[in-house]
Length: 448
Image 1 (cartoon, rainbow, N blue to C red):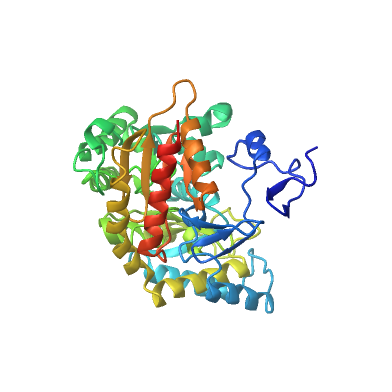
Image 2: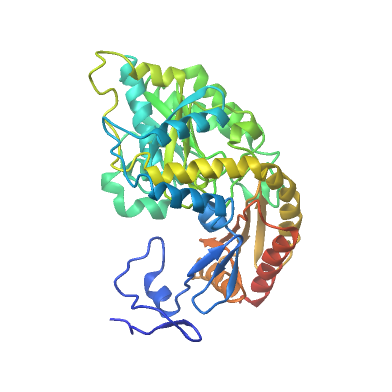
């Protein structure tokens, strides 16, 4: 058992750390030198010993209004005085319907129905089930195959890791992955795309890989293709110009559903509600989470077209149309947080602010070119990645050291493998963008 009085800083005692198994974390190393935050407001965390930490990743790509926005906090507190929980099966509560209406009003025009869950992982698995069940409802049950993409991240459900393309997330569970899944080749080529600002001009032709899979498997077996418009967890891999457009064309040609996983890209990360507002490519299903509540209460879901929804609304009215759901689907606190968050986005004009900050972030991060260990820099919207040369025999250790340096010097970034990711909230100031990047610069110079 760890010492009950381990310290996070001078004079700040913390509890025993041993019982908690942290997700996606090096637990043994972390507990030797824990990084803890105990408060947050706006762009800043605060550690138990009172140090302020500039949040350079919007929580985990989710706190898009900043932390503890007063309107969202008040909405959740007020909801607790009215209704704490409502059953989601065979009964429900008004806020869930109100949220669905508000959400579909700002979604792409053809996506008029929302199904609520509790996380991005659940939302992905829901979308995959919708796709398979939709084809079966249309008498096309032979479409059982799902297509993901290499380097893709779609959460941690068995559906999500099956269509996902990150080897470390899959290898321990290979025996339980969904059969019949295939993957598009990834779209990242450092030699061709290195140091691109925004969308690379090279690479649109890579979408033809879907045509290869159609010819390999026969389109009549393929139910859906799922991709992230921008791949966040893999290190801000930006779609080449023309790539998503060509995927849409191939899917339409062969009757395949196109699913956009917008868990990261939705709600302002690209300066708009969702990626179609910026990129003009219309999916059949959108997966969302994270920014829907600005991270205040867990909530996720899927948006589907009228065509998909109506395919389920057949048969006797007293029978369940879709055998799927969660105890906490459309939880009252989550709906209250989401409704307030949508209002904040609009009233504070945060997406316009994101578009204003984007060129500032782009200029700042690309100024890191030539710093020690940097081999590539990528950016899109309020997202950027600095890729580092791996240390021989110790992959990811250099990035971990840079991450730790930044935290020790008052800035939170994210590292994954040998990539440092940045994703400030739209409320960030130009000065805070500067502090974020200059602290990272110092960390790069300090790393061995």
